[in-house]
Length: 260
Image 1 (cartoon, rainbow, N blue to C red):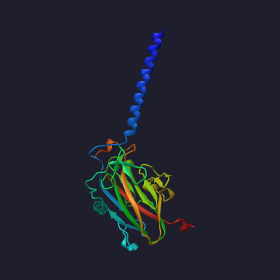
Image 2: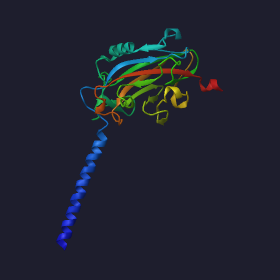
Image 3: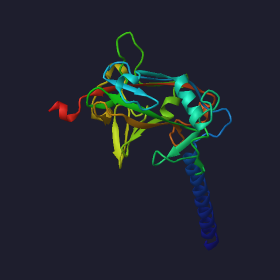
Image 4: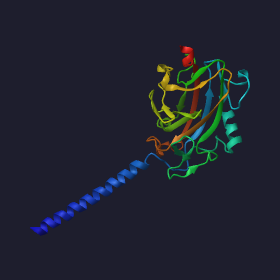
């Protein structure tokens, strides 16, 4: 009788050990499945940054003294040329790699190794904004007119890819992190606000998509980071070789002082 009980206890312990090992494997798989590490990575196809609806808001890659020296549209070619000049790599031939960040300044690979901003694994550049009146700048998915297709949108033939993308805007010690897969919600943690945008037809300018403020005629430098978030559940091997395009559209709204 005791021998049977002992055998039963051994089998029970063995089953428990096997179960624990399987659970450990599942946990490891769950923790790493969001990252992909392959040679043929997602590649930039086209990008444009457009300010098209508000004549009082302009931008450029350099600071200027008057608003008429700024522009309403920046092309992929202009941004790519500036990045190649400053960082030394070509956006047209250097694909992004999955990275992550906790402070929106230092980016790392899955193994924790720091990624240099000259590697091409993620994009970093500076936009300079100026307004003809005091305003709060918003990112908007709305199109400038019924016939236009110029609202903020991350596009790809792979439907999962936009959800893995992140675009962050940093200035004055604050970060606004656009997450295309977040919908119209927003959340704030420390000095960083993460937000999404609804579809163009339902877009509303509100506090969720509000970003930095501008003073009339005063240049403001905004650092832009664009990356594939390796920890996002959409960032898997299924994105291999995917192209994508990014369209950003900014608009201005009155400051709180003007609304009073």
